[in-house]
Image (cartoon, rainbow, N blue to C red; front, side, top):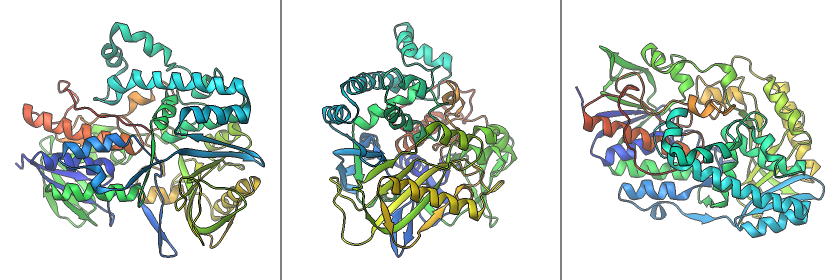
Length: 513
């Protein structure tokens, strides 16, 4: 057997981090990526010959990557250029209704007071304090280590921490909890949007997701070259540490003999032997049997009703006039409840909230001369290829997107751009139905349904945004960290991956949606 050989399936950020840590530990690591470049969802598309970031655009918890690089003998600052954002985002509802949030807490308080009054500003202060409390409660026992069960989580916090667990309101929806802090429906929309960071509805997601407010308050960073550049930096370091990364290598099956992993088979018939496999693929793809029946039995299916949000995105090179865009700008629809009701029923909203990332804007909103790179995104149901939206439905979505921007005065002039819809996302990420975040975080048990790194199939480990601790770039990176730690601990103890294995202490680190 190839006892120190590891195959990593997928060069998304979780797979790259796992490969980096395992190669640094001295293992023989081969990463197999069916695409032409690293990054997975951290991708760009060419529009008029210019790369436009088409995936995640917000980078928080920089220190997660600082730690990952340092643990592997490198410095993140030597590999990518980072700039802290002074303004977190601009938010708009219609003519004259505009609110910016800032890295400086007091500046945000003042902005909210000017926008909605002193009472709402005080509510924001209390909300931020509670968000910090939620984060502190969950960061150690939940995010840093292996996936806990509810009983495990209670045991980890101890008797003194049970009150903290109760105060973070795990049984209350985010939308309901926001009513304790904000009377202004626009502010409830703004902070309810944090549920969409993990592909969920604020009307069904738990109040614990208010921790996103604390995470953003700790710093948002611009990455020169976009987050796809960050993925390349991790891939480059992994290669320097000895990992082999093969692009255009599509895995057809996880090979299993006598109840344990022995390697992977590529679609061209090549067998790559290894007794440890890290699958950086959506668990829905594994559960659907796309990597073989043995892996499917070990993971279990994800039903369509459990899927997170998908999206319709438009990547453009256009001239933006009539509204002062910042790097991150959100244009809210008039009726948030109706928007998510439509998505829940499998329809595209008729008045969607639109996120626009103006990728050439400076922190103060200064624009470049000429067309600028723009990513426009609206949330959509994950109907995938089973029930694809018709061309007329997608065209109508583009029209409603344009109408929502025009409500605040924004006009985009230029070619239509490149549209990606849920069926396209399923093509990019098979087995998901186009869901971009794994399971939706609906209900207090949702986080405990995400599998951990270890599986019931000896030799198979999981990493990615669909596993613990959750979606988002830092969370996915942390999952790769946990997968590598679990694998190394099992090698040291002389055992294979299995849920029946004793729990193992994990190295530090945290993340965020």
